[in-house]
Length: 176
Image (cartoon, rainbow, N blue to C red; front, side, top):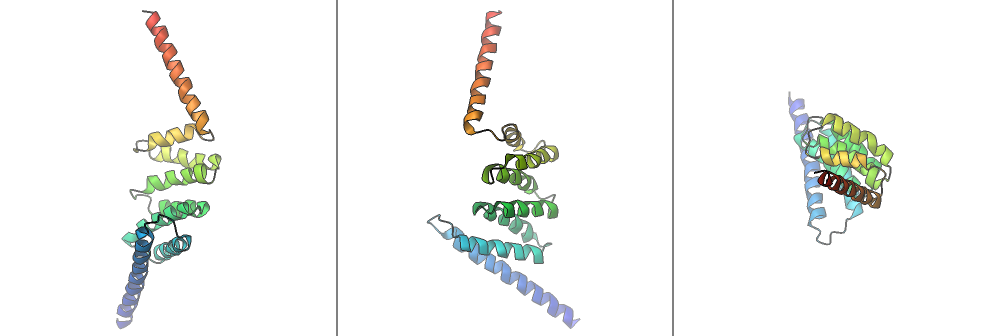
């Protein structure tokens, strides 16, 4: 009985110690008014997030820390690591309110940071299949339709659609 109490106390103090380290480091990172990321601190906080989520996956903070690990990894261009964190998030917390965003962000990172739109496609398709009515589903559809296109090609597509629309209006106006 005493061993169980000691074990629980040791675990909770270790958990609290990591949580305190995370809070202190987050405060340092986000209090920096220069807005210049400190990559060493960001890698350190990613390691703390990872450690916490691996040791305490059932804790309510773990979902937030895992999502943040993906976010910070993305910010320092650790694209593969970011995609992996978001994938782990989806796997461990499939019903979490941020699961759709984690799935979208995997595709977004491949498309925009890694420059590999073909790797983005399955994530966008999976998003639309799983969350067709989600508020960002229209944005995901747009991204999927325009994968691999340059901004100029997308704008030209808008121009051509507008011209087609104008032509149809003129034709229907002259038919009256």
